[in-house]
Image (cartoon, rainbow, N blue to C red; front, side, top):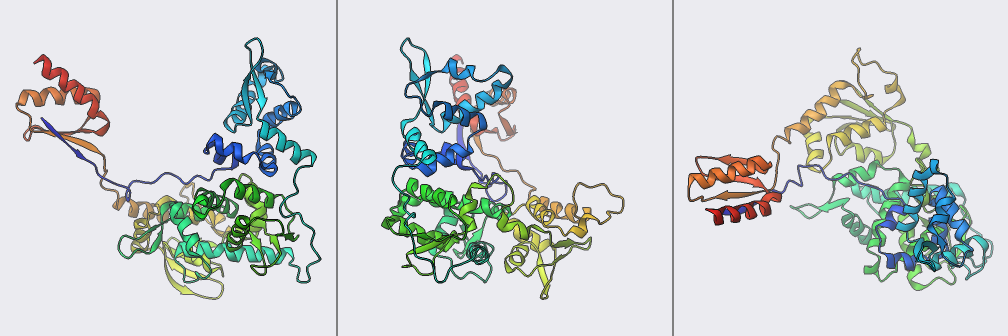
Length: 476
């Protein structure tokens, strides 16, 4: 008997994992304890971590903050009644995963809890004051060309939309750097086309476009931090500066005096992404925008910056016509990913969902469910009041449109690809039958041909089958 590997890659057919936007705690849990220890040397990070802890965990931290010796775990458990044991377990788990506290032995052998020294020291600084002044705390003369909040909001959206325009392949792509493109590729939001090498959006990239702006920025910055070392930047220092910005005041200018060269480089990157406004590269002051302040709002739904843009603007008819009442070129470009645009007027764009336009989106990694969800999310209020001819449906879209989009996707999914091992060249029919019966009994069998004496078994079963065959060969 011989075996060979038959590995079928179906990355372009099988759906990829859902894009996940980790909040601060989830992000820190994925980092090493050494990174966390470095991070807790910054008071701003300690304060940010403390603010996002579960309520009971914050209670534990405050009770232990001024205790200089380990507290027995039984004593900590006694602070909570049995009716809230589940909340206590979650609080303890969060504090341990984030290395906020550590197990410490107590004389007599009892286990105890003690706050990590660096976290305790710097949280005290954040809550009570003291320590070194923040790098952007230097006083400034009044700005003769001060910028108001409305200007900063418009600037932030303009800069961030440059990144989104590039992702959807819009012609309006001025202002995006090669560094930003590398981050999009590293994050898996875009990939290089196999034919011409151009950057094209992926399924994860389309999911990214469906996120709120605050979540988009935070996810983008997480991947920036993952690649910070390649730019000779400290990820911990960059993250601390980001949260320092999140505690700043919108519309107030801050000084660059005292910032290290690395942080000045980082500031220019934030300027490109729209998180800060700086009139000139050499200017000694900058203004944090709402994008920087909103990185702590990834759990809180729609942020103020995008609240005005949250009104639905898309009408879908049963004849597959799509009307988008918008003047935003980004929204038009995004719609053009899966519709064929036929008319464009000053306030409305008309397109049609065709088999070719939807299949082009599917080939690019966009799923039918994502297209349907996008149209539902941005449906015009008028669609909520429309009738569906008595047909019960959970979607505000016409049932014929929803079904047809799903059918166009199913046309491409007629084959299911699985990885397996081929076993053939059996010396006798009896050997073939023995292995086939064993594989069938254990649930390993994917396909077999009695005439060709060939079996295809699951890849995971290979080791078990080898052990079985050795036992069988010895006994026979």
